Length: 110
Image 1: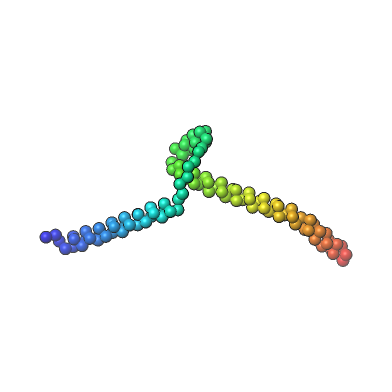
Image 2: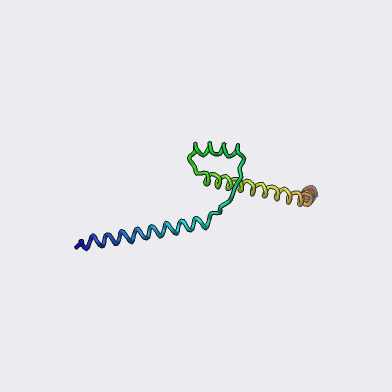
């Protein structure tokens, strides 16, 4: 008959293993829900250059593409904000200059 302590330890180990497996399955499920699969056509020259870089930096292609898209999205958002700001600045430029002249006349009147 096995020692009661050994049996309890085995049950604890089994329970712990089941919890880890459940957490792993849950994590895989969460990742699959937050990632989208796309089909991508890349120019041969860009693909070759990318593969060379990836082999040197030891980064998975998927991670590299995700980071590149994130960086490009930030750049594009910044450009959109700059364009919007330039457009809105042009709209209020005449009013701003007129207000400035009014203030200058007030200063000179004193």
